[in-house]
Image 1 (cartoon, rainbow, N blue to C red):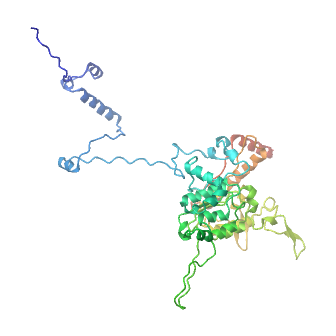
Image 2 (image 1 turned 180 degrees about the vertical axis):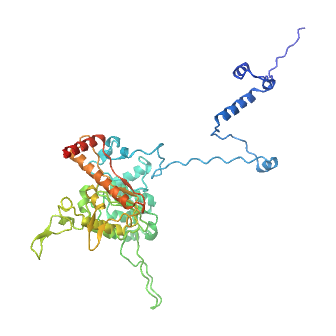
Length: 480
């Protein structure tokens, strides 16, 4: 009978390396190298490559975990903790910042229209561009909150009646964002009634009619820090109304009768609707600029000493009597006609007189001594008042950038306009003059604070190459 043969299904792999590894290794081999397995040879190659490069792997090797009791018995060192994750960069709105360094100033400047968004020129045509207050809550473009707030603002005429008992119950962050959207997208603008509805609720008569509890005004807005009234001041809201709304007169509320005549009467405490207000935007459009009052601004500033961020974009030159700029009266002593107001039509151009503007800015700095951010976009016509000096009553008046406004670290002196390809020479020249004035203000402040104050960042526009060529040709012609 033929002999049976059995085929072994499993066989032990040879202990010598295959010919491919033998050829790649060095010609000098020893009997110990032939006895090692392939895994040992590969491990030796990995160790040699690490020693040659002198670099350690960035990836941690996954080692099995051992209970602490067994680890102590076997005297095994503890597993090192994983390296902390690198913190993600976030912008002012909490969104993830794009990778890489920040864009150059010329890319985001309004003067560089080729780098601006496509819809920027359409959105700000006929008006200046306003920047939001730093640190203010702004919903992400296209997000659900953005679409809802935009729709409520566009339909504000009906929403303020339908939801009047619910708007003041929203979180403070959404209420301030809603006021910003209404002020921007609602054509008539934001009124003082709208402010009272969102920040204080309906009137007492309406709350009593529907048996709704009255909100505690001392706690309702305790976490409101920002108020953006851009484009509403001077159109649908006056500074006098805003001042009376933020600081109402003292009213005794809920005073119980006393048991004895000798007990002193309780003194009503002032009710401040926004006791922790630190950021305020009073930006206006150039068309509404003549309706704003610096006198009312000084009155409002005296009640808001906690402000740290202020936006006065588009405001006219400081003057207490702007309507009397061209008015004259006859002097009772000499009979000659004299200027009625503090600033005349030729005070700045011919006389170089900025005394009234300097005095108003000095008074404003005395009230708002805690400012850290000031936005004067679109105010290029009176940038010179920020660095000029004038003679006062036995004193020299000037804006104190070391003492009163020594905390300001960011000053925005932009134009707010976009230069297009068909811009005239006059527009380019005017923008260049504003940039020169902003540069002079920057040098003046840094010279005053040299070694005695904070470093200040002055944000301003930059000119394109074509605009620089136009300015250069103008300078050459004037030199000739």
